[in-house]
Image: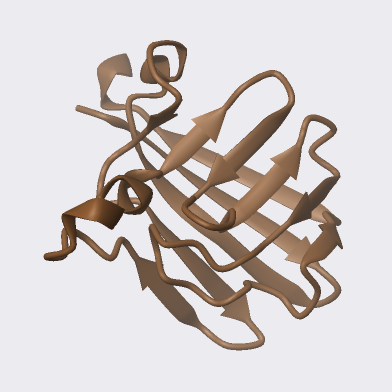
Length: 129
């Protein structure tokens, strides 16, 4: 089974986040990792889910649509391709959100750059059983 994580961010009464599906051990083997179950969402002020756009007929842009999760010592990025769906810096206090081709989402909060007031992370790992 794959490890799944849900990340929730809160900023000025805006609550948004992502559900990340993938083997987090793969982050050492390739730049972006994850699976098509990954999605972005907003909860407040409005509940919206931005699922993976999936494979479309335009093969030229296919790579940009499979940029699910990127993690290194300096940042966490969820969603890519002409912008980061969610970007969080190494302090876990600052970030930004933009449209990305992976999820074809709108910016998840009213300001592109944000300061994280609450960060929640939940992990479901079936390999621990």
